[in-house]
Length: 300
Image (cartoon, rainbow, N blue to C red; front, side, top):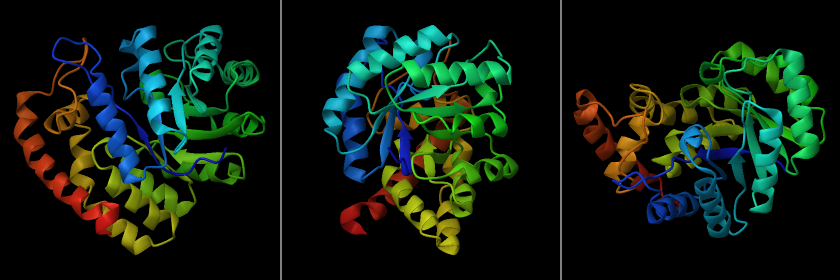
């Protein structure tokens, strides 16, 4: 497996009563497919994985695999704080047809670097699917050192890393690991162009939930080496990046998706977007609709 381009970390739509909104999920998936996105993640942190019950995870993943129909890789978020539970989740994802798993560093428990090596090697050996490492210390309380990632990249069943640290130095340390069979992916929308221009293979994006066509074009420019074009286009998305960070992810994102008619809420303890940001959401929604229309493949 060689992952690259724009990969969307999908949000999970809910109904007004807090149930899965399966028709909205299917519309969200279809929008990604129509845009020519390069992959999707089901039940990652943006998908509120920790708020999902096991049957819901299975429904989301099964539906995504069926709807994608092999047109793009479907990754399942399967990371837990315990290695055995992570392996169990990976095996379930394999049985449901996922192409790979995105496995976050174990949250809350703060393992040592040697613990991370043992954890990810066990998951790669026993989970039954190719593994993409996921480092997001701001959420997990655990930072996987570049040296640890380098050791793990040698495992034949570990096929990439999503690095969510925004500092250029971390990405520079990881880029030498790139090779056929191991992708280095940004996990930070605002710095993704910088990472791709430096050589990263792509981005696992939050923003591409609402601007999949724009992100496909952005990745094409950056990965094609058009620095001026990529940076100019990226500037059009700065207001979106800023808005998506005004409250914890995925609260602002789900406010924009709701304006698109995809889902209406979150699960406690997450709450809807504060009224303080409602007007900004409305303005931004109008702008991104126009941008998406200009970036659709038939208009390109």
